[in-house]
Image 1 (cartoon, rainbow, N blue to C red):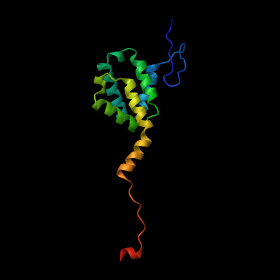
Image 2 (cartoon, helix red, strand yellow):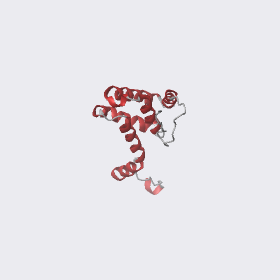
Image 3 (cartoon, rainbow, N blue to C red):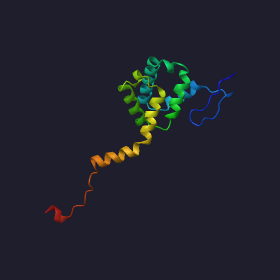
Image 4 (spheres, helix red, strand yellow):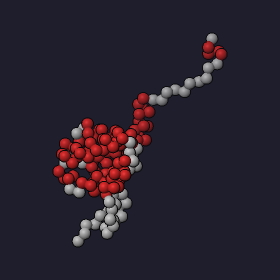
Length: 136
């Protein structure tokens, strides 16, 4: 009996259809800037080296991660991967799902973080135009 494979985004059943995951992964990774490609590879190697449960269906799990993070811009993705690697979350057995959760939460909370940052730091006051009386 064949295993039911679902799309990681829309849960559409893909059983019976041939999907070349490696080709899709290569296209998704190559569409990113070079710095992000390097960090994605580094995260991929660290997760596969340190987390035994992620070694099953490596290609499928990596594809799911990339598909979930498709909407993320390069800067956000790079920042979250650096945070993941620097925090050594892979040693705490946090795999692709955790990393994609970090990226998705950063995207979702960006506006709120910006609002809080503006409250803490404040805005630069607008410059009023100079008149001749101000110069004297």
